[in-house]
Length: 200
Image (tube, rainbow, N blue to C red; front, side, top):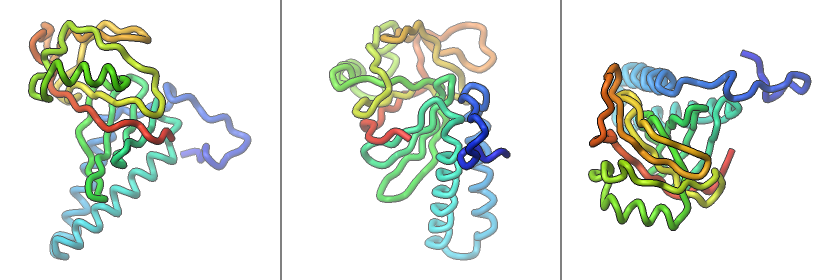
């Protein structure tokens, strides 16, 4: 692979030309984690946890070194790091108590300001009621520090279908993998993160 980061005379390709398929990337990461766990199975729980964290931090660094392959890369208040593909799929490395965990890929991410975030949470009460957002207009914010990320739909299950402009989005429903009909009563999950504090 060409080292674009350290090559002064080579123009770095745009994200849409070198974009990564996040579901494939997620599978590769999980495979590396499984192989590591198999190789250190007899070393005790603390050592397994330590080496898995070392691997995850190494993977995150690898991806940060290739940030030009993503539409957005950012960190939130609690230290979680998100990688967003050109088609708005998102891969999150959740950070809790100083430790990382890779989360499933979600098929759509948007960003909203504080006012819109409060409006969304009042409407759905909890992530279990995210279907209440179907047919509602959500006002989006431009990607910048201080906005809140909202992710929708487990990508391995299907895709969120919506009408979208630069300023707003209306969720129409969820289309399962291989399905012809649109499910207008199901979204397949929602996650809202903490505020964006660092953009890579």
